[in-house]
Length: 496
Ligand SMILES: [Zn+2]
Image (cartoon, rainbow, N blue to C red; front, side, top):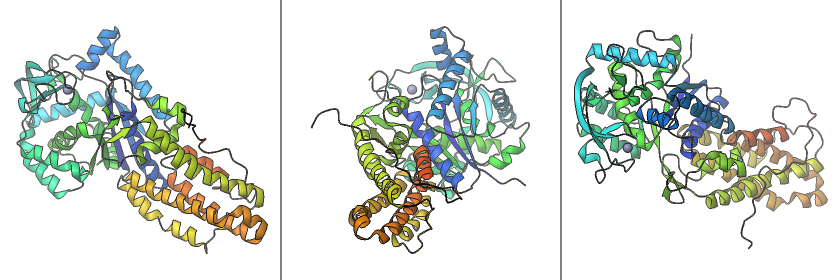
C-alpha cells in the first residue's frame, strides 16, 4: 500500500536568464512548507525544475552562438547550484528537455487529438515573443504586451487549437465547489471573471519554432512551450497517458502549486482545463503570490536593479534572506525589497531580538549550569504558554501565512527577552543562586521551542541552536558553551 505524499510544486523557471530573487522567493516558500511538513513526519514530494524550450531560448542560444541544449545545460545547472546554496531540499528536479517528459508531452498531444480536444486550424493574432503568447487587442496596454510593455507582432500560422471553450462551464463549477483551488481568495475573482468572460480555444502548437517537442503525428509542429511546461507537474510525477507510472498514484493530485501572480491564468484556467480533457484529477490548490519591487521599482535588468540572491547571501547569510522574504511581506501580496529594510530587520529581529537572547542565555548557562540536560520544566508558566502556541503556528504555516507564523514566533522571542530583563539572572547569581538554575533550565527549554519553530525558515540557525541546546542528545554529557553570535550585528555605513 502506498500513502499519498504531499506534493508541492514551483513553476518551472524559464532559462532566458540567470536566477534572480523572484525565482528564489517561490522556491524558498516551497522549501519552507516542505520542511515544515517533514518535521511533522508527513511524507512530502517537492518538485521544481527548468522550462527549456521555445523561440526565446532558441534566439538567445543563436545570439550566443551555442546549441540551445548546451545553453540550457549551463543555465539549468546555475539554478540547481543556487538552490543548493539557499539550502533548498527538493525531491525532484525536472527539465522539459528530459526524454521522459518529452515522450509524455507527445503522448498527451496525441491523446487529445484523438479525443478532439486538440484540432488543427489556423491562427491570425497578436503575438508577444517574450511571453510566447497571443493577446487580444483588448488585453494590450497601449498596443504593447501587458507584461513586457513591448510591441506585439501580427502573426498568422497553421496551428493546433485546444478546445478551452468547452471547459468553461466545468471550470466555473470547479471554482465554485472548491473555493480553495484558486488561492489566495483575493486573487481568485480575477480568474473567475476571466473564465466567465468567455473562454476561447487557443493555439497550442507552433510551426516557426524548431526548439521544442515535435507533435508526433505532424512533426512540422512543435508543442507550444506553455503546454509543454504546464504538463511537467504531472509528467514529473510519473504521468504519461500511454504508460502511467505507479508513482503517479502516490503523488497526484498536487497539493499545493505555487506560482507568481503573472502566471496565475495559465495555472488557474488553462492547466485545470487540460487536466479535465485528460481525465486527470485537478490539483488541490494553486497559490499565486505577489511580486517584489526593488526600492519601489519593478525589477528589471534595464533599470539596473536586478537583485541576485547570491549577493544578499554573501553579506548577510542564507538564513537572513530566507527570514526576510517571509517576514517582511505577507505571502501572496506584493512586497518591496530594499537593502535598508533588509538591514533594519536583520539588526532588529535577528541580531538583537533572537541573537542577543540566545547568547545571553547560553553564556549564563555556560557559567552557571553543570553538564546535565535540564529536565523539562513542566511547571514553568512561560514554557507552558509558549508550547500552547505550536498548533497556531503550524496552522499558519500550512495556510502559507508565513509572516503570521514568524510574527507569532517573534512574540515568543519578545516574551523571553522581557523575562530575562525583569528577572536579571546576572543578579540572581549573586542574590538567589538556587533560583538561577531552574530559571536557566526554563529558558533553555523555551529556546528549544523557538529553534524548532524557526527550523523551516532558518535551518542552519536552528541546527546551531539545537546543537548548543543539547537537542537530540540522550546522554548527560552536554556542556553548555559560550557561543559566537548567531547573527553578528551589521554596522551602519554612515557614522551617526
Ligand atoms: Zn510579453
